[in-house]
Image (tube, rainbow, N blue to C red; front, side, top):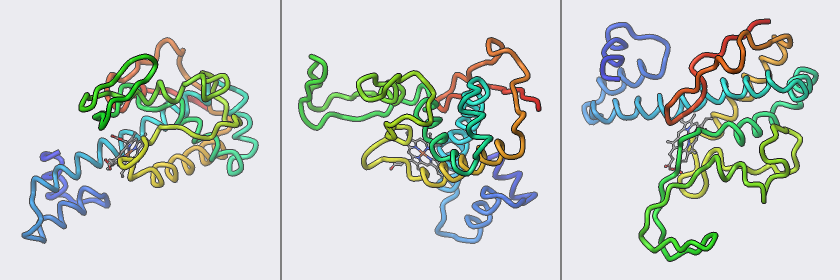
Length: 207
Ligand code: HEM
């Protein structure tokens, strides 16, 4: 990120990193290290998370003719529910939320002791068969509208509204402009990214 910031300093563009580099150099109270950390946070928490939901969402839709046809028939009317279902089933795979128990808690015959660290699996919660009917099915029309794709509680994703807006614009536009979109590879050839934000390495498509 330091390298990218220096590239942007030499050749500023119309982008948020160029703006932050400029703001930092114009303000002597703005620490360089702090600016770099913000850029890293924006890239990981703000950009990679959303990019990979776009990839996975496209994959969900192109492998399920029903929901894709429904979206192309009524992009504006269907996009919100479609995005929420993408957020439910396409939560970052390995992103466990770290929490510490404030008191002893009994869950499923296990006692988590006060002070214990626990890693909460968003994916497991979002596929909880006691909450969702046919939990593994991609169904934007499902009655259960809730999910933990943006976390929960005091650390709930601060960028959730921005991410939802981006995803709604992307999927409504894709459905409107490229209704004939389809995968240009076999499912087995796709490679899952082994990173915190999940997704696939490439998603070849054609129309
Ligand atoms: C679809 C895209 C996104 C997903 C799946 C996502 C997911 C999450 C999740 C699960 C958390 C909770 C972490 C925890 O409880 O420990 C979180 C927090 C956070 N997200 Fe997002 N996020 C997305 C987009 C964004 C965007 C666009 C931004 C900023 C531009 C952002 C910035 C943050 C920040 C700063 C936090 C920490 C909040 C805190 O600890 O108080 N995220 N995100």
